[in-house]
Length: 184
Image 1 (cartoon, rainbow, N blue to C red):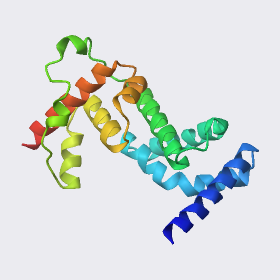
Image 2 (spheres, rainbow, N blue to C red; image 1 turned 60 degrees about the vertical axis):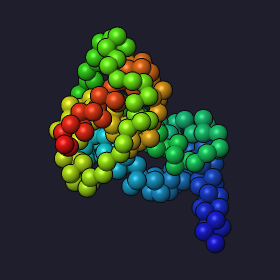
Image 3 (cartoon, one colour; image 1 turned 90 degrees about the horizontal axis):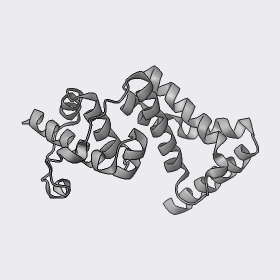
Image 4 (cartoon, helix red, strand yellow; image 1 turned 135 degrees about the vertical axis):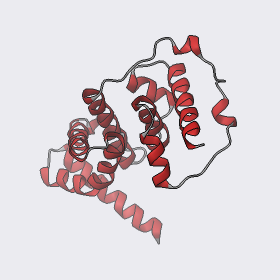
C-alpha cells in the first residue's frame, strides 16, 4: 500500500515539474510548499541563522526553477533539490565567512588515507554532539556537516570548497580527530 502512495506522489511531483517547466507559477508554489520545510532545515544546519537559511533556501529554489530542464527525471527530485539548496547554503556561508584554506595539505598528511574506515564509532546525545561541534573551528564544522549531515562525498566537497580531493579527506580526518579530542 505504501508503494502505491509513493507512486501517486511521484506522479504528482512529475506533473508539477512539467507544469513548472512551462513557467506555471501555481505549480512552482506547490513544489515550494512540498519541499520548503525540509530544505529550510538543510540550509539552517549549515548556516545556523534563520534569516540566512531562508534566503539560501529561496535562492536554491530560484536556481532549481531556472535549471529545471537539467533535471533528467532519474533519481529523486527531492534529492536533486537538496543538493542545490545545500550548495546555495554553502555559497551563502562563504559570502558571510570566507573559507580559510590551509596551504599544502597534501604535504602535511599525517593521517592515513584509510583511517576513517578503520575508526571505531562513538555515540553521544544530539545536544552534547552539537555543543562539541559548535566549539570546533568553522572550517571543521563545515566539512563535518557537509560530509555527515548533507551526504556530500569528497569529490563534491573538494569542488564546492575549491580544494583538492586529498585536502578534503585530510580536513575531514582532522575535524573528526579534533571533535573526538573535545568529547574525551
